[in-house]
Amino acid sequence: MNFNELVKQFGTRQSYKKKSYVFSQGDENNYIYFVLEGVLKACYYDEGGKEYIKSFLFSGDNIASSQALSGGLCSFSLYCLKETTLLKLSYQQVRQAADNNLEFASSIIDLLMSFAMKKEQREFELLCLSAEQRYKQLLTKSPDISQQITQNDIARYLGITPVALSRIKHKRR
Amino acid sequence: MNFNELVKQFGTRQSYKKKSYVFSQGDENNYIYFVLEGVLKACYYDEGGKEYIKSFLFSGDNIASSQALSGGLCSFSLYCLKETTLLKLSYQQVRQAADNNLEFASSIIDLLMSFAMKKEQREFELLCLSAEQRYKQLLTKSPDISQQITQNDIARYLGITPVALSRIKHKRR
DNA sequence: GATAATCGTTAACCTAGGTTAAAAAAATGA
DNA sequence: TCATTTTTTTAACCTAGGTTAACGATTATC
Image (cartoon, rainbow over all chains, first blue to last red; front, side, top):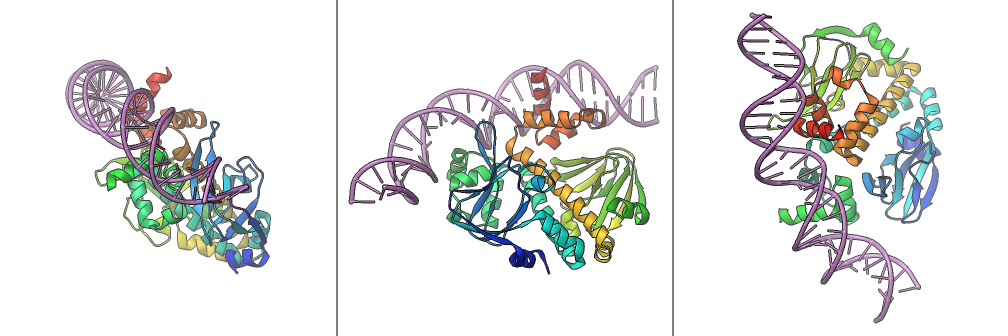
């Protein structure tokens, strides 16, 4: 049994309206979520209310705040861009399953390894690439992203303002 | 038995001279390294040879290229800033140990969770903070960093040029 | 279908940080 | 210790991207 099977069998189903928060920065929340249906953004807000987007989530993705799982508070908010259905499973349940079943523990290690690769890639992009290169790369990896996500949100994911992204698009034409 | 115990018992010891590479971007390398003694930097080089520093490593830290562990090539280089002694263990050995021992699998999950938290923190800093805020945060977390690491390298870790870091320091005085 | 809200573009102006180069300061090595 | 290399600072100039604001184009909402 792997993580997706576990979550599908034992996870609690929950639906969210468009524009609602699954959790907010500063909340306690030790659940791991699996996206059955919908589109979400994981984002930070600074003291001035400025938004920075960590990632977008689509069907089949999963997410949790690792800080919150480890006894802390959520370092980011999770917001529904579309009507969304999630499955949730508490971290305790997952750890318990891992501590009782070698095969499952192994699939959790695989999951965490693929998470590590994704985060390493994101770190690389933010550290080494210019905003224009990040935009190009995003279009290559997700050519249909602008069908799902507004340009404002894409800009905040790239770490620039919507105005700057509009300029980059103009230059590339 | 946790990961540190395993690596100390079964790891292969290897020493490196100052200014040598443990591995280079593009290498195959499926080892996990544990730093016994020394100081290293993990860094990317772009086509023009420009350097970007992913992280610094000190005694007690461990590192591997997750891309390389998953069958790919190293996405970064690992370079010794001081005379260094490492222990290495192949990923296969670690996975085998995890697949045969629940307690060990559980400690690997802990290790990967703490890695996830670190990477989440770094992503936050690169996405949400200005260079000056990142510098301030680094000084708070590692007040003695400039005893160990040159300002040039600190700048490349922050994602700016040494000239820009010198300017920031000047402004803060 | 009308009204309001949000989104994307453009312009003008500003600032942080990049680039190059040169000189001062510090570390390294024979 | 003296010479060489590496680091750090400073200056001048340049560019990417931020800020604000205005305007049209979409999209939601009633």
